[in-house]
Image (cartoon, rainbow, N blue to C red; front, side):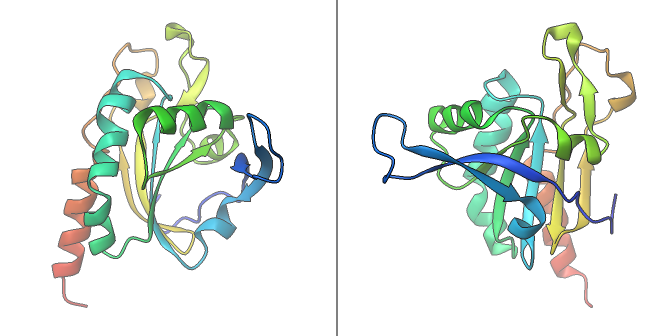
Amino acid sequence: MINRPIPDVTLKTRVRDDSIGGANPFRWQDLPVRDEFAGRRVVVFSLPGAFTPTCSNEQCPNFERLFDEFRAQGIDDVYCISVNDAFVMYQWGKNLGLRKVKLLPDGSGQFTRRMGMLINKDHVGFGMRSWRYAMVVDDNVITHWFEEPGINDVGADEDPYGATAPEKLLEALKVEQKVPA
């Protein structure tokens, strides 16, 4: 995956628009991922689903907690992408109290599929979801790649988490800064 460009995909997002009024003042907005990441250095992590235990109790909160450390390592933003729709991602972020990590809905799984990380989780009633991975993207090119083991054993009930923990990414970024150019 290293040195590979990210997929050229447009995600369907919802953004607040107070001119709409009412109880749901949001409108649809296309988010071309390459436009969003162009000229920036970002961390992107993906997970099986919003409101699931490991994703909600460990992964998202830990990236949120360590956001400022990522910024100190030259990261502009941290994004979480999941094969969930914009409504679910919004409510999940609200539920978690996220203020720094940006949630991206990949409702149809197009980004995840093109990353080669779309897996079938029917055995737990999820349908098609993302395998857990994380990456550093510099101006739309993957510079660091982290993936949980076992993607080829997608029928397993296990949902490993460790290789994609934010601490692993920070460790790699800190080592990179120590290496002389």
